[in-house]
Length: 577
Image (tube, rainbow, N blue to C red):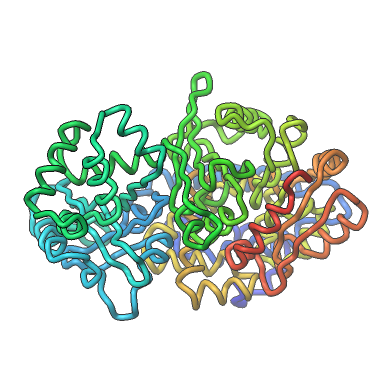
């Protein structure tokens, strides 16, 4: 927020009153957050004496805490539940997903879908339907009145050697206006030798029936199967019906889901020495749950089954990453285990005050369940503190530590105050008076979810101090979508987000030094990151022989997404560190 503000008000009392006035204005209209933040900038500058240990004058700390708490309660009263949007639907999926409007036009798609589709500019999604019958099924869905009705659609995308199958489900969704929409979710049947052996032994399928199933996975079309096998469509339908009866499914849609589920359970064995093989592994994302005492931990697994294990901890980043990153990790032979934070997905919600030690003990249970004795432990952003905590508690289970855009601890208040205002206005309160952070985060989240305009405003604010990342999100839809997903995931729980930011802003020097004495630590960082400066990392590794850094020139906070191959290579370089 670089807009000018009234610099005539120059006392802590006056700026604190402006903070409170802006606070209540934000509750009334969460789109109007600039005045309060600018007032907070002034108040921090004027009220904090860098020579004093106290972060705030006691009277103002008490007054601010009371008013922020009251405003939080008021916001609970005026807050209205917003209906889920098309973007909310696609954001929940770690495989390609999209939403179509009632006229068949594209409403929303995630990055995985965009990468898979690779449509020419101007080519509609309906033009990509593989067969005339797919168009008929889509139009029947669009014209049907029953919510929940579904069908299997196949699309032939540019550059793809075979069609992609999607479950299309009719849904009613409201977002500013009522929409009858079609939700598309990738159904990705796999075929491996293990699946073939399982089907033969468990269901007694004949060689012909196995061949029919293999052809179904390859084409997804009865007509294509008939053509490839030199049989009539009627004969193939009869053979498929026999297979349905043996397996216990009712049709092609259920069969596709059945084979897709087997692909998740069985080891995937495509050739990951090629780009196509890595792409296949990147699409193969398994969601698993683990019961630990009275709670559930959900986590994602992707990459080659026999790959080098990596525990990837991301409390503020979606654990599914992007297709490009997953493909790069698979190409480097890395097997990723990415736990979802408490309250996300099926992971049991826990109080935000839950210690990092308790959380990483659950991650040790994850490795036990997967039969992994030792792993590279990686943490992204504030997740780096969890990675360090894991290494400290479980040194023999930790191969090395990989810190992605985590930085090093701030040495003191003066160092934080010297940061750009958009960063210091968060990290100063996070370190010294975090009680004032929850409500502004809630208000920003409400603005983000309120409308497309609000979403764009928050994304622009997110990179206010980073001209590189702001330019990327303003000009490239890919990085706009990535940033939107980071914000959406981060703001799933404002309590937990504030707690993680407070930990990140705290002095965790002892933790870092302790792990640096026992393990190899590698920093992966954008050289132009304005939040945690690259020169501070370089100063730290200059005095620690067990530490090194991979710094990406021309990159800031989105370095890992801009340079996926470099990210994967830096991580893979820690094998047997």
